[in-house]
Amino acid sequence: MDWKQNYEYGIPVPELIKRYKELYTGAVYDVLDHMGYPNQALANGLKPVRQDMTLAGPAFTIKGIPDIKGDEDLRTRRIHLFNDMRSIGCPLIDTRDCSMDTQAAHYGEMNAVLGKASGVVGAVVDGGCRDTGFLVRDNFPVFCQYQTPVEAYMRWSYYDWQMPIALRGALTSVVPVHPGDFLFGDLDGVVVIPRKLVVEVLEKTEALVQVENQARAEFASGADPVEIYKKYGKL
Image 1: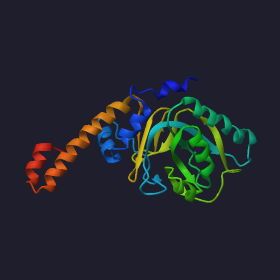
Image 2 (image 1 turned 45 degrees about the horizontal axis):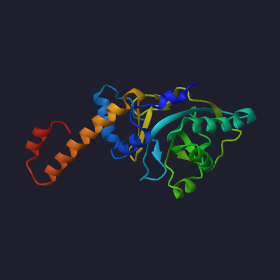
Image 3 (image 1 turned 180 degrees about the horizontal axis):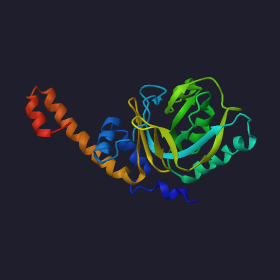
Image 4 (image 1 turned 90 degrees about the vertical axis):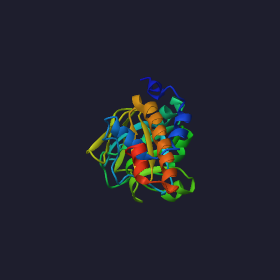
């Protein structure tokens, strides 16, 4: 499969990441909602391991499954996984569908070390993580459902990657995520921007934030709030 085709947006990925990280998830969600995509927010429990962490980037999707037998073939496949990440050649978000498992840590320091060497700039894990102190120390952004010391071996393992996955949603049971969809996260949570909309959503959100900033300055100046609302409409 030529995965690289999923990571072409018309704007270089590093520039997309920089511009998205100057925004905030609430504004991005409002734009998606207005465009007819209200179900792009991930579950409310998916939060950064440190409050000030943010992430933005294209999804490299991973599906994991319970593995009570400790299947060595599944376990060793991760070598190929990180090689496939590296081959794409742009910053990525390690995005993990953990099959609703709630027992183990599905991400940790070694995943981050391997990931960073393969182009990963953050992780969204619909499950658990551990080694949190190392992740915080290294300022590596990880969003997860919970933290636990329990390791995944004999409990959970990689199944496949670069396939459509399903992460728990805020308004729907799951949100589909495809390779190359764009993830943006801050303290409020994570939104998924479909690949075909990445640039359009960015530009519309930048315009929205500019209007909000203008209105905010006028509110702060003591101007009549009724007139400001009339001027700018719904904010």
